[in-house]
Image 1 (cartoon, rainbow, N blue to C red):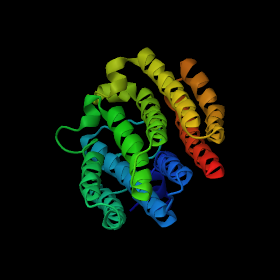
Image 2: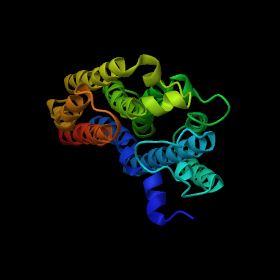
Image 3: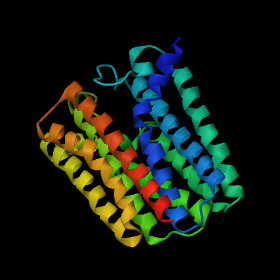
Length: 291
């Protein structure tokens, strides 16, 4: 039986900026357009956090039963380490998805019913990242889906449930946040190239190879910075507060470009998560000031 501390570690709290940042950015755009609805923003945050935790537990379960985590570098995996039974982790994943579903239905009831379908697709995508007989995470599509669901869907969905429109700045935010969320996964998969090759997990990093994966990581962070210029130009110069993300991002890029491997790349995950959180928080604060 895993301890409470192990369950918390298994939820991978360092990945939670990927859930928090899009809601902050999307709410910032709504506030700039004087259409913020704080209780809806809070529910959107519950949806995002519950989905992220659900994804992490589902990934732990699916990789664990496939044996992918048998020789893993990085945070604790509950199933792979034997700390918790696979069935328990599966229940935890679906419990998290249930929380997201309840909060999502509440938002749909007060906005539009088609959001229920979008939420269902999000949950299915979360499960089949590493679940099922043909997980798309094993086929090199993980970064694409993270960009779509933790960038486009999360940011645009947050703005829409409050403003019921999708202004141009929301799209810029979605692109920037999506790029940083995907960069977290790129860094994770860069670290795991050796073990993923052995497990026949053909992530995008495995397919691209070490050097091109490092270049992709840098490209994504540069792309996020360009998107932030678009946010500032289409809203207010205050949105440039988001450039605070460059402090941890620059350190992360240096580490990646230095050729760091294994445990040294865990630091990059932390720095990229911090960068995404600062990006979302900076945009949120700047657009709130400008509103």
